[in-house]
Image (tube, rainbow, N blue to C red; front, side, top):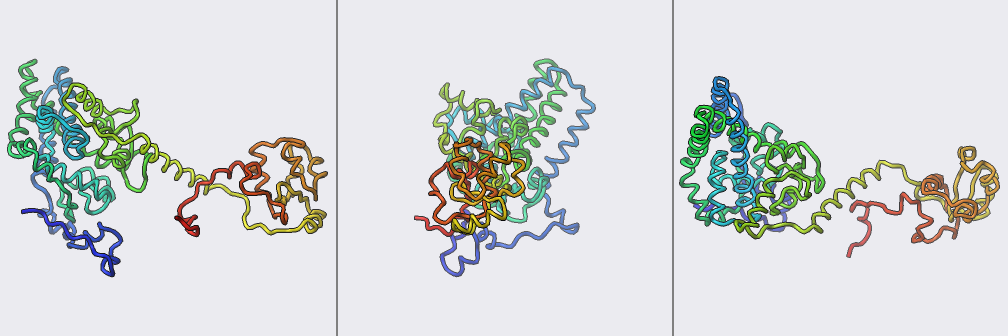
Length: 447
């Protein structure tokens, strides 16, 4: 039966009750009751949760304790850990969940078989959850909602039934893919072959370590793959930088990328999800990107999707301006709404305190006379006078710091004496570029 998607709320009073589409969807159904001591047994996934994530790892650790690890098996375990993980990163994630490139049928079959060694469910199940994660990030419709805590996003969502059903997404493209549907039909046998048969066979035939191949290359590797993959849902939303957007939790960090074959540049990925790259800098670690690129060169992959450098730079600039605005707000700026005074009033006030006029602004030098680098006498001879020419090179061509400091001493504006605002030499250098928030421009008309 096809899934029924709730209708979009119509404009009017009913729509005004919801601030956005997510809140509208959440209002369509009641959440499941909270997990308590009386109902926890019915709220646990006993198969994928208890058996796969608790019982199997415990049995593996016990078996590993009683099984010597030889060098060849250790190397094979690391190699198989990497290539089975690539089946998820290059296959499940970038090919099928995000359609960031096209693959030949041969490459699709290879990625499907490799991914079976990671035991992360059929492609349709995995991609449905991941697409919901991107569409409804950090909300209750996101199956890995990072705002529910690090433990939930790492393993809790696999262990316990969600309080809300995940948001609706379209996976019709995957249902129309015969290779994806072939995997659904044969998934248990693929898992058996790639978790038990292949790693045991390689170690057994290769160097006679049948038990080590099964324990280390088969099951211990699987435990590690499960948790490193989960780091994309957990650590990548808690640990790192936000160079493109900080409204949501995804973050970039090299450590997460090292664990996940390049999936750690998660802030970039959530901003540009259809880009086949997670890392755009040449020096950033993303072996999945390099493999996809290599496949394109030998004819196994095509139509690699990338966002333009111009759009990527816009994303960085947006965050840089936001950081600059924050730094700007932490500083003390020249006084605004200064009183306008005439020349006679300026001169009379200058007899009581050290005032001078520069570029149409009246400045009070109280407390600075003795600190002036050029000496007190240079200031004294200009008290009550217009010292614009002297300040702008007549006596000394002052530095940016001097301009900024002078602006902090403004106490008034000389009537008809302030220069036009476009004359940059009269604007403090620190104020030549001002980062403004949209709220500060609300009083202006936008056309």
